[in-house]
Amino acid sequence: MDKIISFIRRIRSKREETRKMMLAVSMIVSMSLVGLIWVVGITNPKKEKNEKVVGVEETLKPFSLFGESIKESYQDLSANLGDLGSMFRNIKDGMEERSEKEIIELEPTKD
View 1 (tube, rainbow, N blue to C red):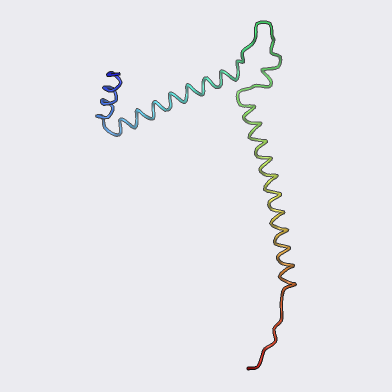
View 2 (cartoon, one colour):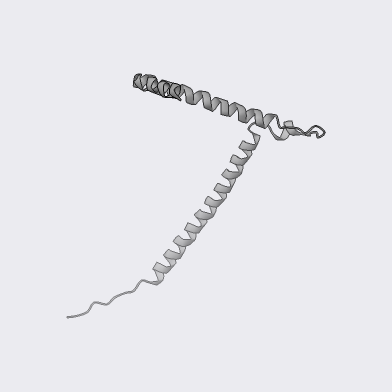
């Protein structure tokens, strides 16, 4: 525990630019490790001893599932926005019809 505290104190005593550089390098290294583990986990699924995985190379390419989910999300979003546009057009048409019906002509009064 004393080694960790002394290491933190040593980092605090360095210049701010050096601390920022250390932070950036540690973030890049840690995210690279996470990405590497993720890609290896997708491309090499675990197999049981007696079970064969058929067609894994075709269906679980590293980014195929991610790409398909993005594509589906985009299609759903565009469908929802299309419905939203038609709804606003219907509201606008209804408001125009209502405003044409509600015009009241007033006659001037004499005081």
